[in-house]
Image 1 (cartoon, one colour):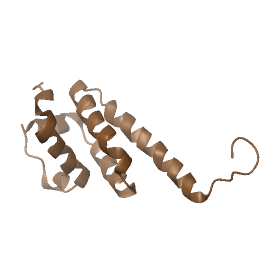
Image 2 (image 1 turned 135 degrees about the vertical axis):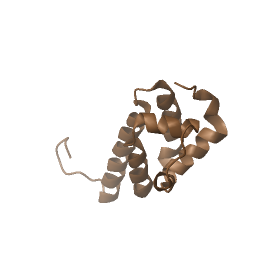
Image 3 (image 1 turned 90 degrees about the vertical axis):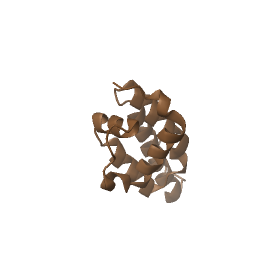
Image 4 (image 1 turned 60 degrees about the horizontal axis):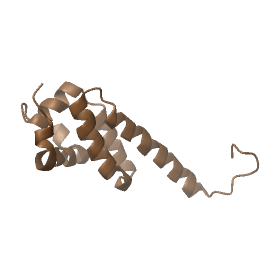
Length: 110
């Protein structure tokens, strides 16, 4: 433990702490896209769902966060069809559903 003396926390809580750090980092990335509409949309979605995401879903979320803003914007606004391989990402599918159901009006065409 960084505070001196042996850590009494079992390994499981170490892993839990790592997951928590990772969740915070991914949430920050979702909110800091640099495009206001995407910051709000993705930040809101991630804040709402991330606490229930396991490792696998966090990996999928990371894939979504690695995508380019202009592409995400076009897909979310329906200007361009979402490629099948991207739609196959479960978190992306959830996000598209989230946009359709609640937040379409938050995305004004750039």
